[in-house]
Image (cartoon, rainbow, N blue to C red; front, side, top):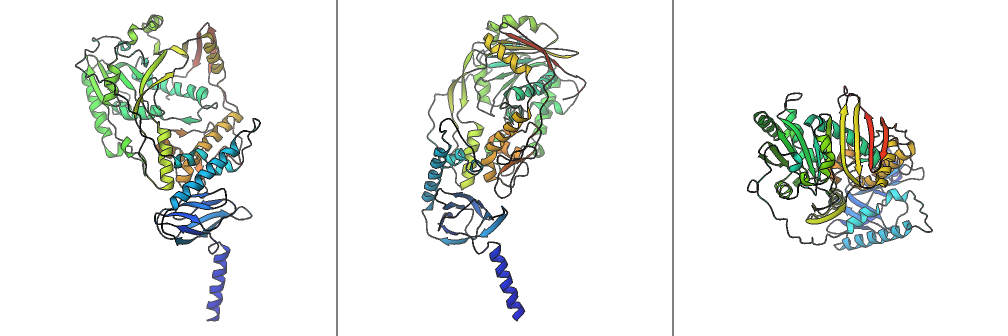
Length: 538
């Protein structure tokens, strides 16, 4: 009996040493919002049954439980080790959501003042990792009513007369849209991969490949184009040249393109389409992420019309009708006279035309914006309506008029016509300097980590951080040095296997330049060569 009593004393002592008896007292209302009975010191993190947790300016813990009942929180001891504390949960009725919002507002305002530059200086600290201010603001944000716009008048095809059979694909493309004509489907996929590599170096947040908006992935996903030909890999295709028509001001991650396919063998192409669509209808081909925040967006619907010798494929019926309903076509544009000599050359692989300035009908609120809103809802356990709507937009386009790419046995020859000589000089400088230093690569990776902080608060246990980021926010973080992103299982702090964390960064490696040579500028035109080993499949 005495030994049993002694064992009980030892067990209670060990339990107290582990923090189980020293956790904070949480006052919890009927909707599981809570406030700690007293301020606490140091950094605290959510444990079992705690949905969200914030330490306010005065040290008070506020947040929300997932379900009624027991809860725990984590903190660090003097040596930095994590210790779990069982909380003393006490019911207090209702009304604590107002206290949560008040504490969160005070924290946001205080952090904004702390981060305001004084004398042009800003000194980041470890709390930059702990306090994602933009995310907290999103949790406080209430969506406003959407503005009302008159819809674009639809044009029903084939009631309107389509271009005649044999018309250039530029005769199908509206002149206020970007159009990219490629000589074959295989060439389109190869050049898309090369273009992505170059764009990642030139546009990837200064470090090449810092993130991937997933735009091409989702466009192909909705158009179902890859699967149409994947059912007969390496075989003949019933399509020759093709073109992609792009809205000039798309929302991020939501391109809504339109494809034009020149059909050379209607029967073969019809068989490929039917086989591909049947394959995509199988359950194992449907993209249905676990715990999907946007299940309404995963349906794959596309609109298809065969008009003469051209099949038109769009991500939805409204895009098809609105795009083909335009009157002015690229075939009537002055730029066509400049690229016409290239169109008759068999070596010409790609011709892209960019409008000077264009109005576009787009969705208000991109995937990143909507994902942040859904993340903050999941974090604090509430639901708000999505802020989607249609509205007109005008945007300045890149300073490029047209691009022509030709191929030979050694690789690519690229010609870019710019709007100004200054733009040509800048593009030439960028193309000459596609290498990335280790410092720049590390900075880009830390930028990814900063953008991943909100996701880490919600999905600390994510096995594939990049894929879950794509599911929630419509983009994937890409480490320039091929590192893998992870979340700390307690704090949710993002880290990269190569570059470490924001608080404790590590140095990566330099990226060699792309094999680009013979860069030259002639007035407003830039030319260069890109060496390609065509024997390598990419």
